[in-house]
Image (cartoon, rainbow, N blue to C red):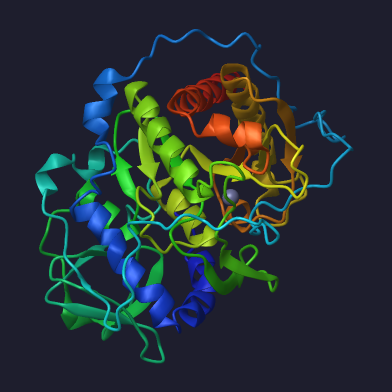
Length: 429
Ligand SMILES: [Zn+2]
């Protein structure tokens, strides 16, 4: 399935605009490659954890939810409470009296972007043909940098510098210039800077498209640990072609009692979810496995799209000015979303399955599936998508609960159960 490139190109001006601030953008892009070539010591490798994962946990007592059918014209029955106005989760909690703990693996700010070296262990991942999903870019040429190459915007702002042998996706080609895609960045390079002399492997795609890819023989889940080391204040369109601009990425909230940063909680649970999914035989794309990345909400969705994810799961925790507010919610688009309303039925089913199973396993009170078209990372998705708001970090009890290893493990199991239930529903429909 080939998708038109205009969606990406539509984002280009904004990405390029955003690139105009090298101090905030470029060094951390280089940091992304550190995860890639030399995984962060804090991250458990998938291989080790899989063997210890339990796949025989009891099925939650809730029944598999029945999502609405396409023929239904009225809004689906959700348990949306009328008591509280929706929390805009992509917006940082501005009134939180919390000083976030320092993130230890932030990349230091330097003037010159570091050179990203290509991945070394090419033989460890299967060839592209073994990948289970229809990859959006699999019918495009994968090109490689001949020597150290600088990716720049049209106005000459340096984005990143790549070592020789990096894989790039050719998006558009003329005799002189090639428009390439590298981890969400679109840039033009002269043709003589590129070669085809390298095998197209899953690793090459990972290098070009970003993220950390764990191919298996079944469905692919894209797991997005919400937020990252640094917010991205530059703006991007709320959806493809939209004039509505929204900050590329907020900094997230923090625990009122534990002072744990949301980005850290999200990442820990996401890594456990990754291991649980791999143990159950899923393919997994991790949007990030470290805090030292620079990936906007739209770019995260584009990555999930590019890999052809069967489900895009975005992990977050909530914050509220009311410290009593508690409970879990999941978020999807509305039926009339102008960008991807056609994915409503699947996204709603995914959201409902995730919420019910997550709540059943963790014991966190089930709040609602919130349907909204205000989330950039949902609107850019061309695959079924949900945001899981695990609980409220502004509620001391939930904050402290979510800080425990036992809870985080159960959260991962509950979410994996939800994904199992979703695909069961999908097979039956
Ligand atoms: Zn968040």
